[in-house]
Image (cartoon, rainbow, N blue to C red; front, side, top):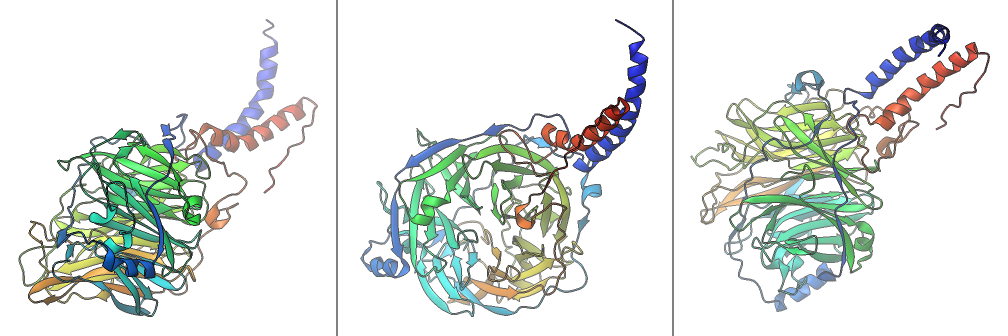
Length: 611
């Protein structure tokens, strides 16, 4: 060994190090505080199932024609059970940004004193309380907007409206699913927990409803319209929810589904409860859309039973664009939201266990205080703090729920950057006197978010409200009234809870990707002394707003650019992976190496990436 060589090479290396280290530090800082050498979260590919399942294809006219000849189930008045869950203690998952705190990452902002949310451009009555003997609580108010129609899906009925408010078609929820016969009878003997959305990728409506609260006869029922016209033909399938991985017969039934969609798949989640109504685990069904769009049977799905890091009440995103991943949000560890995701969505989906994203502190509970209403001491049940829906658009994931602050319930919303695993903005919608609950959130092409919800106070009956959040302010504007409540509300149908909710609908109109529709529940006038709920549609447009900022190299909803990295296997969008770090360091390394070699009398051409 010749010791004289080391001082000379060391001296040559010092300029190289002096140049590469500062550049590298800057690039790693840009990469975000989540950088680590962690190999990535736990993944799962689930179990692939290809199977012929109960299936029917029929139009709404055919449903109506068959209904009189179908033996009706004796449903009677129904109170859909609220299955409360306890969040898992110490929810697993990698914290995405350990150096970020809610206070420094994204301060919580409340409603702005001005300006007010935009005025309604249209408003009309939706589906209402069915008559005695067919009553149901809660309505589970859900709706979707297509190019020419609005579709409402409740625990009681399926209805189609024109955008001017005309009711074009209505059938009971039981009849909507009634032709879907299974080996053990019709799944629609106790349909509940409906969800519906308009899939802008395919131009179809997609609906999900659960059936039967008693295993082993628990079903996930899926319906897809054949075109963008919901008055036409629908294809429907039933998946056995309590048959785990198509092999193991469990005695756990599905509850409180989540529904999401991207360019390739339909995503359905559910909480699984045993016969004693004790939560056992969560499930995710990832169903490729191609067979659904053609009305085929058998179909294929990927089933994830209790995937790594999962928890109860997971909400898959309604995904706009093609980000290459499907995000699923839920309540995580203390003062965290769990953000899991699938990649490989165009082929075999791969589940990634969640990152824990810090949010403003709140108390997660399965029993929130009831909301007041005038003229009656019985309060409105506000259930718990579970997330209620999720939207991905323009590189951000948005979600909402309601929670208690100083014993009073208000709405909370979050905008999360899935690239860094941090909260870009978050806020609360509150009022000195009014309580707000059961929110839903939508995001338009300009990054304006709209939130619709119920509200009441000691002087106001339960009504529907809404607000918007503009990207320039990141603050919810002053709340506007959709439909005022008309009377006190007390309806338990023999139970102990004055049920409301369990959710609502706020969506973007696909014709312009700017206008919002919201569908909310309100307390209607009583009939024969019996309290009635009603639903109300409202339309509003934010007006002129600045376009969302486009990151360098971005292609809008779809992402992309020179430094775009396709995720697969164990690569994670939360916290920069070693591969991403290597890409970020490459220019600095090339620059330093080139100068180092130039000192040695050699030149090396540097190839720059081309977008």
